[in-house]
Length: 258
Image (cartoon, rainbow, N blue to C red; front, side, top):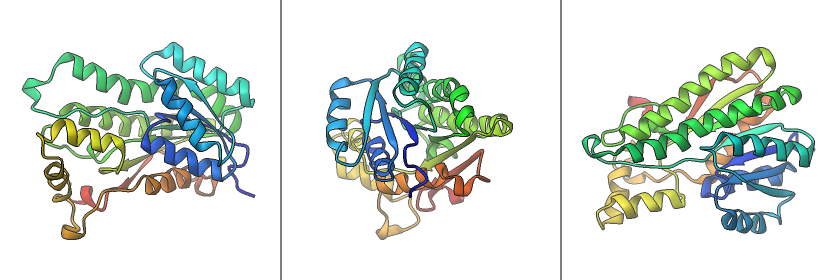
């Protein structure tokens, strides 16, 4: 029997490409999965697509609003009776010259990526303490090293990396593990959106500009969502309960030279 059977799992950004893949893997292991996202129509479609794999539900949540985060935790505990695992995948991207960035862009990205991640973790702590649960955050290669033209995103994901370290140390005496996965570019709708918005009309050129930085050269490829899901389940497993306050890079070696 899988160790995740009947465990209650929250996945923020649950209707996105990465969230969906992580949800599918947990469902296949028998977990009870609750998707949290802002768009109810997308959540309903996600649940419809995923229900073939197991018991899945959703709670409409704006991770930039603390009251809706608190409602998320309360609803999941009310429906399942407990909370075992939290996975924070909700995230936004922005890029461009720093002298052209706006306060609106800063607030939008930092509110979702950093504030949202922190307060979902924060409000989940009392319930996770009851179950000896864990948190897995999604950081980024951009949360480990700097990238030119990505200052706001770097700041938000660098914060996620350090939140993970800090909370991992703080919560260890309370039996809660906190880890993160730091992927490079992942084959998701978010990556497609990046290329369309910031590629200057040359989507393939945008992709190549990303891949040319990878050490694989002509063999370079983007990270698959399934690879992220495998890492999340690994970090969530009590088989590796000695791992906490750690960020696991899955980036084809991209950050090894930072």
